[in-house]
Length: 341
Image 1 (spheres, rainbow, N blue to C red):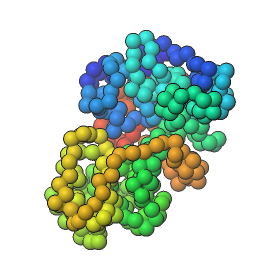
Image 2: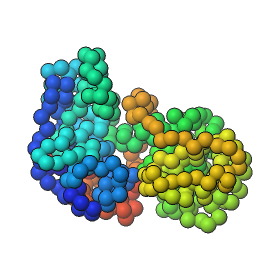
Image 3: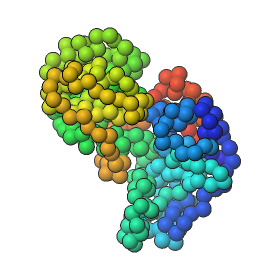
Image 4: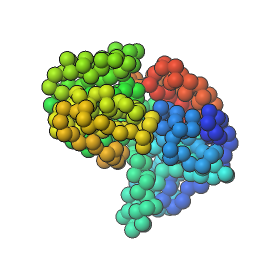
């Protein structure tokens, strides 16, 4: 089968590798579509992601597969089910850094494994393999990964209706935070982002205050727009210095979170710049805990992938390098890749 493989910094290739062999708790899935991720995929390609598996490695974690075969002990997947975040396992000298950009992958029946007393370390990492509700297009399903991760982190921060949120970054994750906060009943959502993203952020994500992140007076402008300060600030980019630029905009007792990975492990905050004491929240999320709510919002039409990519603009796997080039050129925050067929 074909898979998108990173061989070294800047070296993204489509190569042949062995098809996965399902075990008794596995469902073999034909992988249909995947979405690019600038937060991880792009860093893996350029060699700056700290958790990349040994090269060569199969890329991709925002993928959806259709079940085509089930193992003897599978009880929660049926033929034809769409399953989120399916990836291929290591094989033939290839490691995987989630392995979602391939033609076939495995979804693990973690529910059955848990019920049968299988040790948790064998299935805990497969809880993101969730069934997509009937009626959700396969071209929408790759977005479940971004939507679930960001919603989980936002709710773990303690965000609730009436609260105000400042998002640093207007990429795929930043837009997801803004949209979720709006759906949760935010009092105000503000964003510091790229100028080109202002219109869709305001129109589709519920952003009320939008400022160019390059403004030298960013904190002053934000405080003028929202003098009482923000209850929450999320850095969706994760870049050194981002937090210090806006700590003066956080309410005393507020919560600050770094979600992006641009400078992961290197970021510090100068607390002297803040209005008062605040909580620097760890980056913690669990996709499985928000799958139901994301599914409901999708079925209600509240979450639409069109804010992140055009479902009608699909890149074949053979041209995945062009999909990433389109994202770098800011054609859209993400790109949709057809993995099979």
